[in-house]
Picture 1 (tube, rainbow, N blue to C red):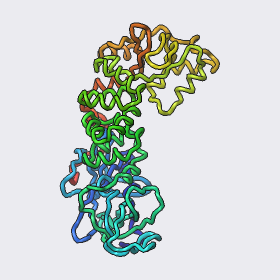
Picture 2: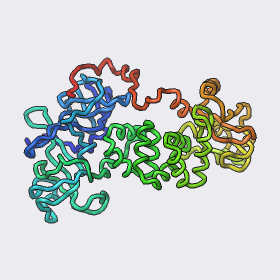
Picture 3: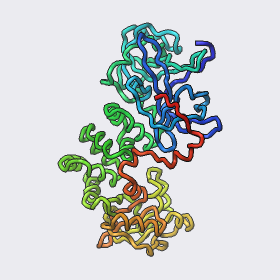
Picture 4: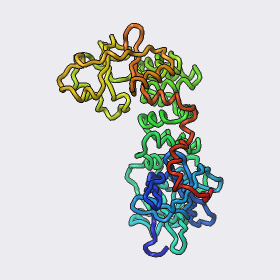
Length: 447
């Protein structure tokens, strides 16, 4: 390789913005596509998997990449918007190569300052942490030339251990099946992704790899991701977890999402998981399962912000500052007599967050509660519920039973979830793509 030729570690490309020559963002890098070659020759980099604004994944050939620098990828601007379909001869670097257990076939040399230390020997098994690609000096082609590995047993991601950077030809084992490969480094690569984006990553992995990544996520992170996945992916992932862990993840999910997922399972499996959940969490989910799916009761969450009338504006503002709350749930607080958990005591009304911003912190909620808006009964059908939210410009609404107790709140995101086609999480938003079509046209997709 000529002096000064660019080298990029692939994990650093994950999530990097892709721009056209005019400075308009095309999308973000989600993976790198390579073709493995025989005889220890470095793999050729074919292109990038780029997620565009509609969350469609397209293929960007490296021949269309004019620069990889300063945390961004620059393209020629001529991009085919056809969905990326992986071919049998293609390998995804982030999705398939990271975390592999491979063997050294030659003494480490020519890499990082650590290379060659601690007596690393040919035949020793190591874990792949990253790979680097470099641009060839004559042509615009790229290839994988370096492998960053860690010595020692798998599963020690953050434990002290020797790391080495070796030539691609110094390791063997990339053509082995995925059996026994971990997912910790892949998870670390995607840790900054929003749950919806990570869900999209999981959806495009193989079922085996998807299960490995799910197993490596902590309960809260996996719960957030499951809420963003299509039903069949949710069921597949949950079925691969041990029942005790599946119950823990269901507890971490929003009750309405947990109920929707459990509703997709056979009745006996539902009951086993509910029995393993904490009684209070299971009780809320059981109540939701008792309502028809496309009603206010079936769509509501049982954990809105509930305060007593003697609570102050300061108390309410402290509650809505919780970063774990969705914007819809943080938009208003519900004022009720005790008990404070759903179903509550008598529902008195609600206070919008804008009203909280206008009144002094010491103001009692009971003195500013909005009682004009009639709550919804749990059997309110989806069309009536949609009209209610639209008529009063609301993003959430209270659900109250015949005894006047607050059962929960319906948020606009859950309503939209049921208004959109069932496969909307797997369908491209063609309208959003169209906004970029004037500079994202062409026929060379390389796939």
